[in-house]
Amino acid sequence: MRIIYAGTPDFAVPALRQLLDSEHQVVAVYTQPDRPAGRGKKLRASPVKQVALERGIPVYQPQSLKHPDDQQVLQALDADVMIVAAYGLLLPEEVLKMPRLGCINIHASLLPRWRGAAPIHRAILAGDEQTGITIMQMAKGLDTGDLLLTRALAISPSDTSASLHDALAELGASSMMEVLEAMADQKMTGQPQDDALAIYAHKLKKTEAPINWQDSAQQIDRQIRAFNPWPVAQTDSELGVLRIWSAALADEAVSGATGQVVKEDKHRGLLVQTGQGGLWLQRLQLPGGKPLDAPAFLNTRSLLNQKLG
Image (cartoon, rainbow, N blue to C red; front, side, top):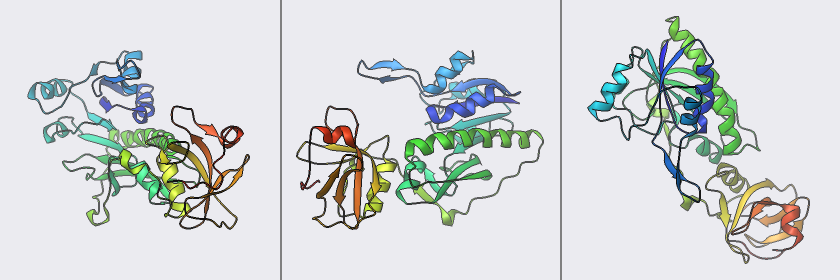
């Protein structure tokens, strides 16, 4: 099939690579315009664009697909289907109808749960035991289209947004290929979503990063894992703002004021009293420094008996 692929970040790369290695023809790649990045603020191509250029695929980077001129360019590509994965731009209804088989989306949740921008993070924050990939026929609303395929993935107690992101990107790629095969054989029919079950995964904000030590150890652990690698959970301390990259629930009983560092152990970390239970902080970062595991952090500093937050 003739395919247009639209994606921007790392999440969209595995599916593009699988497409390029398949019998399908990727006639064009759409991705967001190059953005300033790094300390020098030089323009940087998206991960998807980098792969497309390596493989000699034409790349299009419109600011929007609302303009008729940009829509005419897409129409002229004469695609059978357009595959969308974390593209970052809304597709007008006119564009959704242009490919012969429409547009399909790779979404990182089991729809209709966690429609929207941050499904991976919200699933961890909510304590979900599983998430997954949905391949969806795109419609006018936000992640409201018919379900073509769902594949579940367990969320482990140690999963972070980073680890889950990578696993779901690979699962999304294989699921997409499965759907394309069924579409080529005309064996694919969609199932409408139950809107009554819809939950929205609102975009993350930096203002969510501060830890509330009145929360339970379990909830704070979820926050730390959900916000790794961004925006990273943080707390005030006498050493400045501490960014917490990883933690572990304490097995032992803890006694202290909420937010107090009640114990330090070079192997286990800093034990903090929360609103319910204790939490071992295992990887921490001071302002201007690099993330440090507990042994390195405690080698030259101590927060014992100090209150965080």
